[in-house]
Length: 154
Image 1 (cartoon, rainbow, N blue to C red):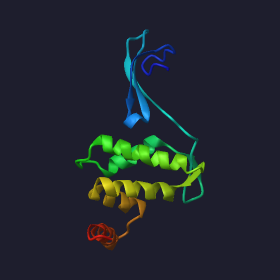
Image 2 (image 1 turned 180 degrees about the vertical axis):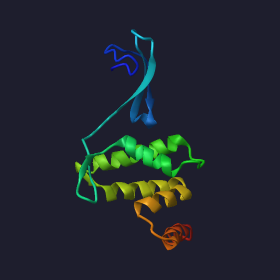
Image 3 (image 1 turned 30 degrees about the vertical axis):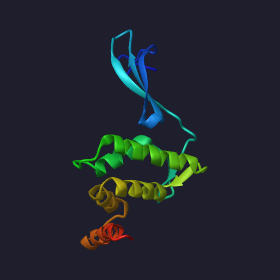
Image 4 (image 1 turned 60 degrees about the horizontal axis):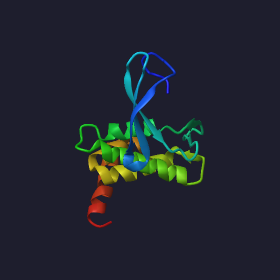
């Protein structure tokens, strides 16, 4: 693993432990050349996924982008970062185990909506406002109605 500080090719693993409920390995590394310390994560990747956007454009799937979008939705909310990470891992597992190498942005968005609904109602509404491209206040009322309907038993 290349050192992010001095670009040396020779870094040493000092500590390894399971992370993300065993779905990843967290490694603490040190560079013998500059003494820099950093952490890496190793995850199983079943297949390379491609996201097909609404425009038809295809882009490589990015776990980091998915995580960032969920973190934006839960910003300033009392949601444990571990729960967000577990939700992202669950979404990635679902996508990879589907057997498809191409997934639509709509499918990814639907899975994020499901995960956020279980994590935090405000984050769910925030994400929905972007994902569903809200144009006016009634759009918020509709999504709040969906949440209310869930509380009433469906």
